[in-house]
Image (cartoon, rainbow, N blue to C red; front, side):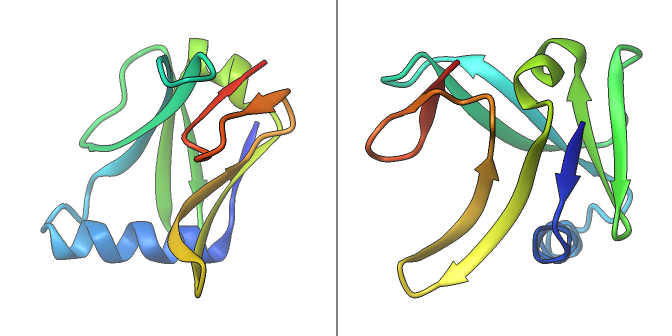
Length: 107
């Protein structure tokens, strides 16, 4: 389904601790929008819904609904803290096109 790198898990854990939400997980969704048609949405959530896949990796939980799972199959969630910018990066083999800013994609 989706793999979470160790650096992404560490950043998720850091953000959860900073916000006092140690028992939350990261909700990862694919929604319509952006210049290429689809975009990723990440937010913290306390408990998953009934139709949610829960991925546990390196001590963090990632929640993915069934619809988003279709677009995220085989993807990797990573975190980059390099000189060219920092942030979560989603390496998605299903994305056929991506906009110039990297915020949206199409399949």
